[in-house]
Image (cartoon, rainbow, N blue to C red; front, top):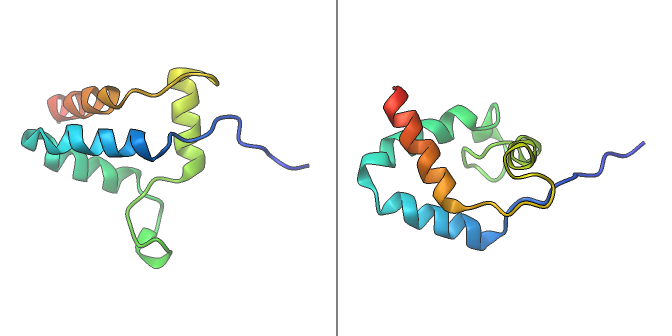
Length: 89
C-alpha cells in the first residue's frame, strides 16, 4: 500500500513572498530563526540539503489542516504566525 500525499506543498513563489515579507520586518528575524530551528527535521545538519527545513510530510499536514485540500496558502499567514510566536515568547 502506498501513501500518496493529499496536499501539494506551495510553490517557490509562496516561499519567496513569505521570505520577503519576513525580511521586511526585522523584529521577526530572530523569531523566524528560532521557529525554523524548532521545526527542523532531527539531525538536519547530517542530511542534504544541509538546512534546518521541516519535514515535508509535516508541512503538508499543517497546510492541509489550515487551508484544506484545495486551499491556497497566503504568505501573510506566516507573518501572522511569527507575530503570534513573538508575542507568546
